Length: 366
Image 1 (cartoon, rainbow, N blue to C red):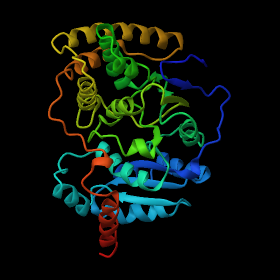
Image 2: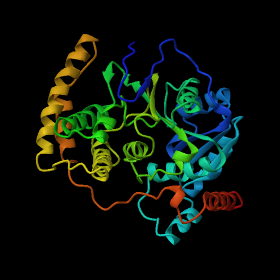
Image 3: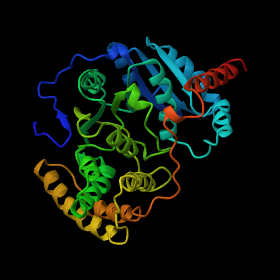
Image 4: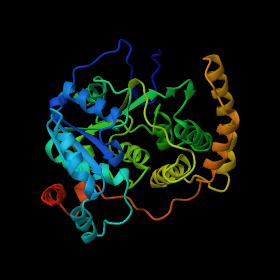
């Protein structure tokens, strides 16, 4: 328990509050893939949302055609004002292809589609993952409450401690030491902003509909970092807050393999470097890997001490190996693959809704 402020407003759960919040004027976006179908964690999230009673819940689903029917029936079993967007429906893909927005896809593209739909019908948008085993009815109100005042962008933060181990490895071992190394070399407002977030890679955030229409989305795992860059440009320090969501438990990924943390590190680093270059910061790629590793090794020492202090297990060798693997992600960003802000998109979000609904209906009639 602490109450220290950061460079952005930091709102603490000092008395475990569920604050007054405009939940009835918000759409809660929950991205899902087929693996979330009837899962215990996802069931908990949806059951809890029944209690929260938001204005709307929008499930951004990426799944093959044979899973759409069962998925829709399962979602309809919850007492929620729920809309399903089939993000990889053939008709949706065709619409994007027609406007040269096809190609690579992932969580970022799914959330981008949902942001357009959500912002078209609500004052506020909340986004959070579906696999949180520790999901609480306080999460959505905590994320929304600051928006009903002076803030326009809100980021959630939490502690990742499970099974007597420290998690949040990509954030702890890549993002934090990398941004620290950058801060040591660059006196830039964007670096200070990126360093102010206690869990910059969290999938839990909220924003006004106006901001949702103005952000450009990374297509895959760099979504959260890319949003920080757009939020900084649009609302800056004064319009940003972060809120305490307590302890957090959700699914973990392997370090290696498809969609493992090593692959994710490349997407996150690319998004981070694009944010920096957009703001005129030269990361000095030739020396940055060495500087990053030096800072990260110091962090590993401190994590080891923290784990020992709390009686947790800690594998220093494994964490140092991850640092070495993540250093390979430090390279100039490639081709800019970001999706456009909805305010600049070549079609209305309603076209996405129509394409998704038509495709879902086609599946249902087979």
